[in-house]
Length: 532
Image 1 (cartoon, one colour):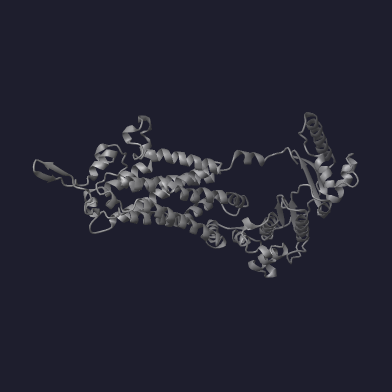
Image 2: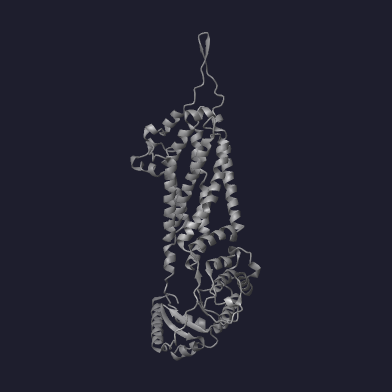
């Protein structure tokens, strides 16, 4: 499927159009010739290193370009697989593979090959410290170095010997000085002895370019990959998330079973405990799986595809966000509905279930906000573990600013601004003011189970009535009444959550576009000039 995905994004040239070979035949031919038939339906992550290298080569050869540039295509491969791949590339370049009589040029970087592989090469470019040590035909390499007083010893692999010769030795100061002087000398000698450029001849037509796909085609290819090419892996991943969310929801529902019946007098604060657990505690395994795990597993593949020009950064992040939106909402539905139904807090009106639908809607918005915030941190920070740790710390601080674990009056004055940023401080008062209203309490009320206290006064037994539940007092105790001015009110909690979600998505997109998640060490490794 990976070859089909590449074909969808990078259409080959029309130079082989006269052969009347369609895309599926080209793909099947490459898979067969590169020895990948037995792993045709295998996940790329389950392939061996050699199979993944050959698959990558097949994706590039599928484009039918005149010039193919490969960066260390044999890295990590054993000698037999390396010999097979180099021999295939040599035949393909000479027009003897793939059913074509057209010759091509294959430019590839190799670490010291064996003598047999060395003899397959037609031209060699030897670099060190950014300077050219030799460039020319392979058969001219040994006579050239013998001419400059560096002949290859007998029974020695020329590639090993000359690569060691131009390597900067940093084991000691003396070795560093000697090797740098030798490299400087060889570079200067070749500069003086290299032949002048030959006459290129009359101008000719440029090679046919590879047809790049537009943004819409890229988005469609990414959608097809997620829905078709990565199955059944993607389905199993989402099924695992469904099972996790359902399990967490059932556990919460069992813990907070039938709250109106078990706490009719509102003295246990089970309502607040349930909402805090659902909003702040239980969703973390799902959040980590939805954001950290997915980004960590796909980051290398995505970065490689972007470097290959298969699709753009903006196209990927927007398409990926849109693809994950509805499955994520479904996961959060599975997480919220069972527990909320089991706790019995959904009856807020005698004649309708509007309270149930409102709660489900605002909870979907809150959990989506938490997911978007975590995604933004994952794309902004270079290390996934650092992002998850920082996300946990920031979320804990914002949850504490919600007024349940830490009362508003106990917060220092210099952290009061956190109430403006905490989705918990917006949503908890909004939900509780609806659930603890007089109408909602009356709708969910059951026969009082309190034990009436009997007081004997002289010869008359007086039976005190059960006090009626006072939701206003509970709201007052936590500072959730609007008249107390403890909660910063944006006017509409759902609208504030929507704005928070959009801001986090924009930050995540900007972080991905700027490639903030790539570590500085990886950036530095790209330009290492101390090695040939």
